[in-house]
Amino acid sequence: MILFTLLALFFAAIVLTRRLRAPLALAAVALFWLLAAGWLSAPLLDWAQWGTQSVAPPTFAARTVIVMLGGGTDYNDAHKLVPKDDALIRIATSADIYSACKRTGASCDVVISGGNPQRHEASEADNYLPYLLQKQVPRADIVLENRSHTTYENARNVAALLQDKRYDALILVTSAYQMPRALLDFHRFGLTPHPVVSNTRRASLGVLPRYDNLVNADLALHELIGIAQFHVYRLLGWF
Image (cartoon, rainbow, N blue to C red):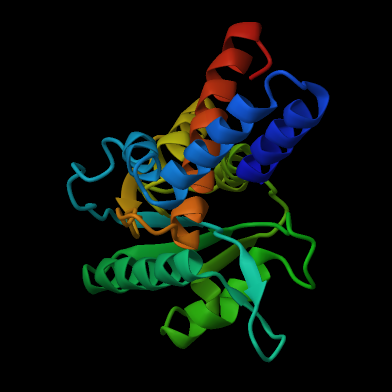
């Protein structure tokens, strides 16, 4: 969506300015080629995912809560609503952590946090639930938070859920590109979870444009703008 907006701005500028049409068109082509070929997408991803790979494995306590952030839903070829690829990896990672937690004899809960920002037929949390059940996580140990639409709301709503819940260890599971902003938001609500990165995205460098590189660039820009917005709002006293 960010790249689409940028393209629309370029188009509007090209239409409205006669003298600068040629250089603006050239700049737009060059920029989007650099993004699609990976040469700009790679540093954007590295920036968004900076510092996420140097975290020690989680430790479990007597009462452990594992929070998994939603990663979107999509319709497959059979028009069935399913988790997006990143979300599937987060589900698998959360299930693995839950299994490791239970092997220690601890009490372990998994909170799935994700509403319905895409306005599909079900929220992310409700859609992910069967997949977590298939991975042998009991329904009694799963808590659904299905109202949040943003990372900030993820943190706010999870903090409200945990307000009256006793726990000794808190673990946060999400993709590398979302983790820095998620930690900022969770810290804002007094939560200090141990981060566990489910997956890291990489750009493919080359000459030919690739759609995946544009997706990666858009994700990275979304997170970087979100981090900048967080700090601006904090300065203004809105957060």
